[in-house]
Amino acid sequence: MKNKFNALAAIVLAAASASAFAHGDEEHAKPRVYDAKKVESTAFGQEGDPKKAVRTIQVDMADNMRFTPSDLVVKRGETVKFVVHNGGQVLHEMVLGTKEAIKEHAALMKKFPEMEHADANMAHVKPGKTGEIVWQFTKAGEFQFACLQPGHFEAGMVGKLTVK
Image 1 (cartoon, helix red, strand yellow):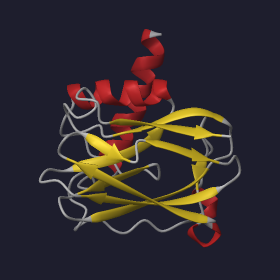
Image 2 (spheres, rainbow, N blue to C red):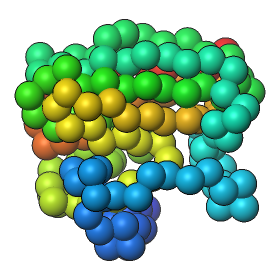
Image 3 (cartoon, rainbow, N blue to C red):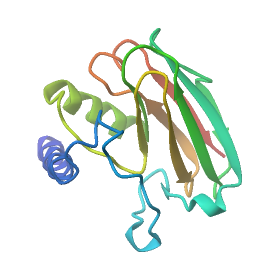
């Protein structure tokens, strides 16, 4: 388990250094461009082609450390565009993942709060702004979405995502 965690930490840190200034500095980050050749499959799906999104789900984030809605249901195979709005006064993010991956990522963010990264399964949104995630859900199961800014996950900023 320790080796698995260390390997994950190394991967995350390598990815973080490759995408410097993307985390928390969205106005200077380049917009994400979908490239089918670069899509990587995960335990909960893969980056979706925006042209194939079958529906849009609005998600609001607030400084009370909650998502609205906090419980989402999607169909296996569905490509969904999440429009994520930050109605708060501090930076928030929405990160999709397995319960285990979210928990491990949250622990890394506590250790390395300045870690910078910009993956297809996350949107970092400044106060009053809106971000997007386009995701194709290829596997059924129960997953999560969470804000992994230091202290936010621990304060309960996590939601349930069911893929049927």
